[in-house]
Length: 388
Image (cartoon, rainbow, N blue to C red; front, top):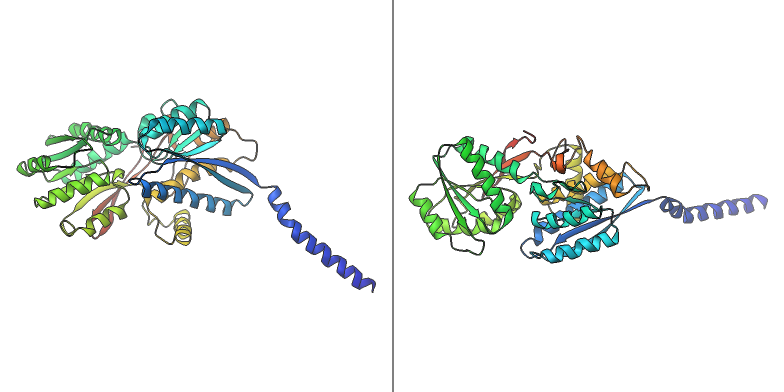
């Protein structure tokens, strides 16, 4: 009888312990709130959502590796092409006393976000802003994508040595800061290394008719057209050029979007699907077989039932930089400590870089992966090493 009573007590105590165990586990969790601040538009909606999906995968993987941490995201949304809206959101973030924010996909948005968040000592990490001025003299502001000036220099050098064209055509969209700055940097670097002719056509974003530019390129036998702008502009130009049986080699950059989206655009149009050839730099070489890359792809496929792309990878990496810095501390961390820890990032394994680090002004050292794009797919050509 006594043994039966003892046995019942032991079972009751065991059950009580099992019921209370989650409380013991979660009582010691280290909670951090991270802001996510992006614009949402029809045009950029997919790329922005892909970045956010990558951010979510980084959180899932980090919490799996570090079960003592709990990461909560606080989402902020500002209106597209509306700097007043960006200012409003930035001020709200300051009032909310958020430790760190991942966001500002466009350089013009990141410039405004960074100015305000830096002044109130909130860390900002932009996944895709490429203007080097975003982090200039702002110790709390970091960029993860390669700088426009570095991209332009490497693309100009690659274009010249890969194709050695006697003449090239350049479409310069002067109505937006990103394509205009990148194009002018490309032009300056190309002029320095080449004695060939350069035909520059300045256009405005609202202009949907490229017929005069195309006709002039045809008359002057231009074999290479540089379009360092967005995918919608490329699609429009290629379509109009194809109607005139003009099929040059195209040079582009990350503004084209993902490799997969460009392949789909070219594959879906019978007018130019067999003729399009483009070369562009991309964030991510997705076939690298290291542990992080394999785990990322596995988690992404499981959660989203699709293949990840470069937008996902750069979103993951931006978050991984922040979480890697946070993991070195427990509850007693503030934005000053965090920005110092992020700035010290050195030889960090990321998806888009094997040994990531920051240069002065929190500028990233990044490799450029060059891909050839046709309607048959995207094929890796070479890597242009960062920091050179």
